[in-house]
Length: 261
Image (cartoon, rainbow, N blue to C red; front, side, top):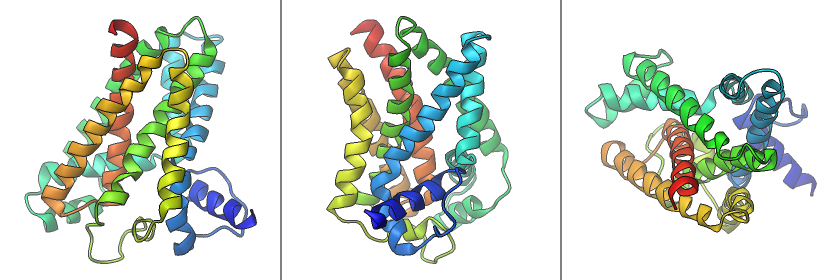
């Protein structure tokens, strides 16, 4: 139990800015095992984001509350995934060889592709999340499930790439590499368990919600295929980009399913 808590806190420290016990570090062995809890981090980030939305919605409009919920989620993770999305936009937008793409993604400076990508990402996320919430105005609990299912399922889609593809970089220059070395059935089972539970809970109120899995994993498939084509695998930035894109696809899927199916 003590070891499992250590693994969990390693995951929490790696993917968020939430304070952890002082004895927690980036131990490579624990980082490998921490993948099992990555979608559970979505529960935590989604809950914090929802709480921000709920509190601000008490005295501000829904749209303004959504903006603050997005800000809080970014602050909670330290823009970890958004940074990966921007790096992928810059790398694949400006590079035409594996070496060039990886070099650009490693650069800490943000370029035009990354800046434009982030602006469009936040605009689409704001609009889709606002419209998705409007579907559940009769139940704040459903809004809560919407938040945590979006964050957990998108993280499952992202982390599942390490189960099927190889890490792209040949060196150890990325802090994401230790988490990509090895995985066992425990990591696979844990990831899918924590990734799917919130969606199953939401599907209790509308079983057709399960159809959201189809566009999510189609998106995941084509992103992984694209990364494989250009850089022979994935990097931590690719996982971050996958999480962000799949989160947006999830909101779009929920809107379509609950409105038209």
